[in-house]
Length: 160
Image (cartoon, rainbow, N blue to C red; front, side):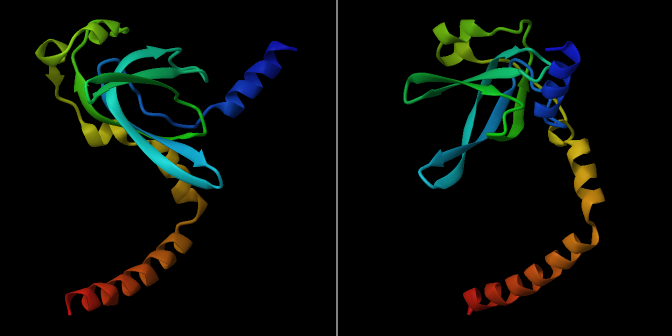
């Protein structure tokens, strides 16, 4: 195979916009899970302890959280179609990319010092919004009006 063909296939697999996730970030990862014929979205919230292959179609993050005294780590491919959304909740000041030392720590020693950041600005994906606006502005506005009109009588019946 030629290198050009490989680059083309890799570019096709890549998402148009992903959130810039760094080590030390507390994130919520929304993942599609298929159970039989049903499909649902499951959320996993934890600290990013590792980021690998940044700016590549194989970009991967490892997210860790402690649940019921047991440490749970999950690895996610950022450009996977199963990962629907990654939302950054908090940022911490860290000095390295691989935070595996957090595995041996618990309690106060496992805390990371927080850092101020623009949460709305970081989680905003400008390329995805431009595509949605360009696709159809008028049908989206037409769909919203009936939904609002239907929602008001439903709320009125609940109060009675």
